[in-house]
Length: 217
Length: 263
Image (cartoon, rainbow over all chains, first blue to last red; front, side, top):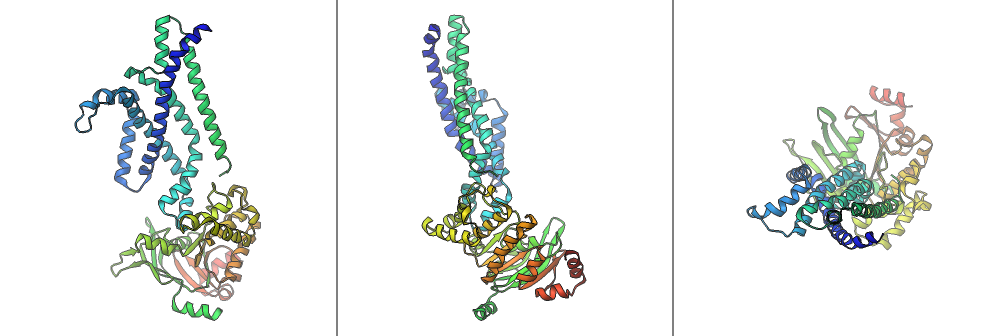
């Protein structure tokens, strides 16, 4: 027990890094994903195709590779080349990657709304933008909560990939102690931390689902 | 009052459709449909399924685009075709303004499930007309009283029966104060015992001289409420006559066959 309290300090520091990556990614990639999805379902075929290509690229290569690319290779790319410190580089990679996955969830949600809803909105005089904002998206939110919860829980665990940029997230902190003290106890504690985080998320999404359950379809 | 209505009707019909053509792929669903509807007319469109009657209705408010032909709503051109057969729609803003003169009621209600009954009704007046909530709510409540559903104000659509849903849909369309009401098989998705309440609301509208175009399989409604009945078959209007004549002595053999089958 004393040992656990002793290693709690560095593990909590790691958790703070993990949570920062998680929250920033969530905050930025969900709106970006929504934007991508709206372009994807729009009638602007060229833009839609470009988004399609973007999603293919982001889902088709490992997140770790994307992170390494943005950190190590991006500085040498002409025109857009910038040198990013490790934390921003990780955030950019995570946001770009997760936006692609969230975009597909949003797209599935948007396309699941019946044509009759669009027609009813249209004959009442609502514009496309008003129809999306007032009629379609509020219904989409309810339908996509389960897959959103899935993806978001995956994000918590994916944050451990930032160790490749030598950042001390929860898992790397735990591994450091394991290698120093020759005991696997820190892994168990780290696992408990991850479980706790996903438990809070599960509750959060459960609450949202319940709030949206005021109406049936 | 009726004479004034007639005089107005003589000046500009509420709906003019000329030679509307529409195909879905290789199937020609409308083979040149023409119809004029005067203010206060209640026109029932009957015919076998697949005859193009719903498509025709949907061409009038731009839910479908026509391939050729002309549509005028209260004298304003929604779409016209030039001599070469190229059809041209009014500019977007104007198109929306013209279409707003028509309310529509769908076979499957298409209520917004995430909004309560009251919210369903005030949504368009709030967002489209930009009216104040205080002004819109009393009007919505009045409409709900009219269709007999005031007590359902705060219910969500899923809690309503089909007949109640359709009456809310009628109130929702009326909240935009349309000059014309289009009904696309409003009772076809209802259990037989629930059609009466919807037809009553429609009859009430007809009594108030609303201009109505009703695609329906309800022969009793067509006979008793409409001012004229249009029989469509295979993408064309076979005949259009006063209901009494249509049902007692249809002129065309196709009409006879259909009515024999229906009655």
